[in-house]
Length: 261
Image (cartoon, rainbow, N blue to C red; front, side, top):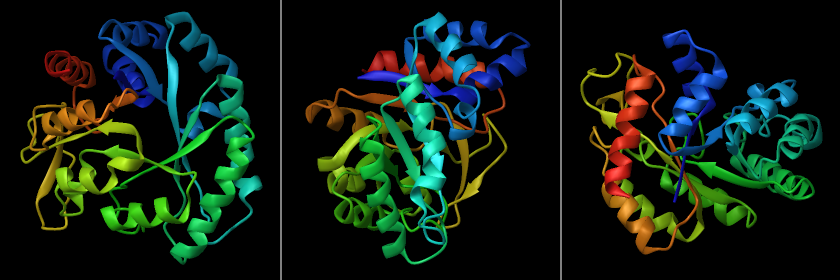
């Protein structure tokens, strides 16, 4: 397995520690992290700058999370071409599609299918995660499975921490989705604000706070064990938006993962 983290996490380190982005990326690379997840607004218009940064530290883009509104607008080319052009220029091979929060899910699925066909021409494959927003028709295992079944070219980005948001068990979700997993987000959830005070509220009312990987309530070690048993060799992206000290949290996550993997 390869480790990645979010480019926005690296930006937080640079801001919090008052260092440049290249130095922050070098620190992340030293932790054994080789990829970054870069939001679509972080690639469009920044292709040259971002490309130089990543080339200098010998890192790659593991995926580009991208937002669309296919439930209300099925002009897929208009919405997606700028991101796909940037992805091809930067050598990014995966796009994490967040296809919309409003409209009929059949229409949203049609948009995803059209996007998959278009993305293939750019050498980009589509992945979808269990998104932690109740408005998303893909925030549960059943929702993700619906889109996977409706869009054969789509695969699953398994986010370890978002099933708890939906009141589901992550190991049961893994068993339901494992045949289509090609990407992983390692997100832990804490029940106390030790690492950050921003919380989301789960379906059962439990406040979920950000946490370094392996320090919270999610069964991440068991998920990793199942991934290994099933032969997974792709990226596992460390994710903990909202922690107060991003550098310390990322070091804690990487250290734990080095012991477990």
